[in-house]
Amino acid sequence: MAHIPVAIIGGGPAGLMAAEALTARGRAVCVYDAMPTVGRKFLLAGKSGLNLTHAEAFETLLSRYDGAGFLRPCLQAFPPSRLRQWAEELGVGTFSANNGRVYVQGLRASPLLRAWLVRLQQQGVQFFTRHRWQGWTAEGALIFDTPNGVHEVNAPATVLALGGASWKRMGSDGSWASLLQARGVALQPFLPANCGFDVPFGAYFREHYAGQPLKTVRLTFTDLQGNTHQQVGECMVSAYGLEGSLIYTFSADIRDTLLAGKPAMVELDLVPGIAQASLAEKLAAGRGSRSLSSQLKRVAHLEGVKAGLVWEFVPKAEQADATRLAHWLKHLPIPLTAPRPIDEAISTAGGVARSALTPQWMLKNLPGVFCAGEMLDWSAPTGGYLLSACFAGGHWVGQAVADWLALQEQSQPAQVWMKRGRLG
Image (cartoon, rainbow, N blue to C red):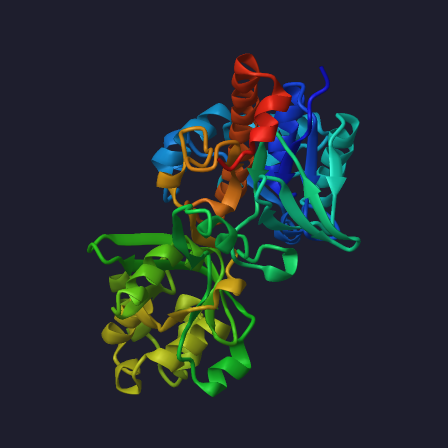
């Protein structure tokens, strides 16, 4: 018996992986996307090198997620090792960098996406672009706005993989939230995740150092619960403040502190390779007629943007005292005043509440409607964690839809339960 196609709305990694899992189970699939082409945010994410997943031990990897318990089953079913194997089956090898991040060979996302789309088409997946989902008819049909007018689709099951609320230009705008809210689906507010933060830099500092990287610094932050977090890495000075992977690692805790009305202060160790006592001794010794700038460069290799931070945040009265200056270089306080707007964030927290879903990620009050990807209420730092969970979640939902359809068909003919409507 020919199957009526499952509708997948959203052509990012989660939606496409759900399509692959469904076709592997013999299901027909149609993928609908509002943009002219699928995978646009995926391609942009890989612009500076596609970080597909992470090579650390599974329990350590799982601990990086807000929503670890929720994601555990899907990540166990489709772990990073399986994701790497999947990429290699498409002809795109992977490698693990020294920091554990796993990248695709050649670093670009486009060869992987291109090979994947070819395979999906060979498996019979049909793609409909410029189809913006607008909800359901009273009878349960999906409604799409298209260049050729309104299009209605009856599907035996639907996968929503619509993304979060950042990067609107890539199609991820969160506009779907009102459609689900109108159907009584519980949602959590969208919040920026993996975002930059405003810093009150002076005009001179902004003019001279915006766009420059801060390499090899240790960042320390104490969260609302009093837990102190530290990590060595890199971030970037921007015209508005700080951004980049080291900031993104702590962005959820920093954001939550600011939302609670508390001041958010990070400490930067500008010279993590030198102990404070040794640094103080070297700063005090043999300066002679050298300027402080020359001494900082000679002793601590501080110049450029790192030296600029010293002039920006170390009180002038403290700069002449080697002991005090060494303390500042190891514990430089940087005030963060606000997260950047949500559309600038790499990803978002919030979305469909976990309580609204069955263990198979079907909406409890909308039978036959499943959700996957960033539109669900979980978050993670950059480093391959976001993509890894989106791929795994798509695979999880694809399997769940196939299982659910098989149960439905055992109990009654497909054409009967199709006519009853999926929305009760």
